[in-house]
Length: 266
Ligand code: PGA
Image 1 (cartoon, rainbow, N blue to C red):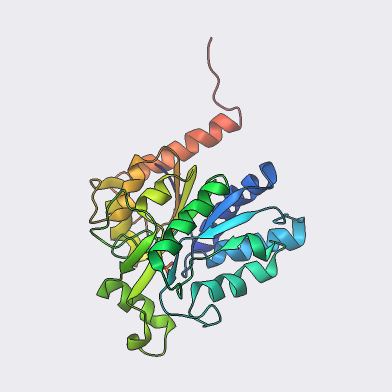
Image 2 (image 1 turned 90 degrees about the vertical axis):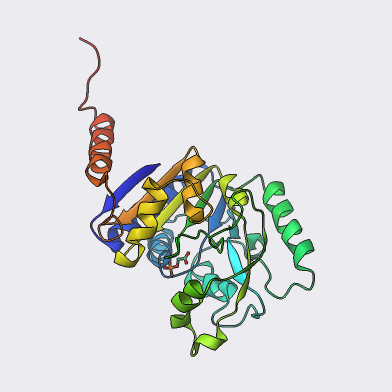
């Protein structure tokens, strides 16, 4: 796993945006996997800026979101469809028909989940999956104990996640206990994963993800099995990493290599 440690959440957003923007420029009809939550907000702001100021073109992009609460209307201010519309989609030129968020009101969740998986395949698979991480180490809503081979399905949220997410609702009792979520196996099939984390409250989950054993108790640790994961995190989220200095050295060496400062041969 490539670990890039940045000095601030703003820099995390800028660096993450360069990965997304370079893919969109290189492959205009790419498939993006998108995430909700506080962490990717800075990334979306930066992509909106690149769209407005540099003409970054999303017209051919297809997107699939990781998850959605069960029971919330798309127009509910806490639904993830609403989050994506207001924080990203309505500010760029993506075609609304190409944006996919699981439907938390589906009558037959199993059939809907299967259809979601099929749509991802029909679109050619996800080129780049943006991921946040829960303080319990979840990716999407794959709570501790989720199968590392899981596919899109219904999941019960842990009380830790419900507590974490209660800040967006008026009362904790309003937080849905169920969500439809891509599985760990679905996420691992993306061609590249871009994991973002900021803040001290993520430091332990990041340590377990990057340096702990691969375990279903920390579903983000399954990313160690993926061949192309870039974790962009801030200093606070990197606070518990044992090999933090080494990750910095790797990035410095990469930059020197790209700048032609490292020469090979006699
Ligand atoms: P956050 O959520 O970005 O709001 O911290 C991340 C997550 O739970 O996956």
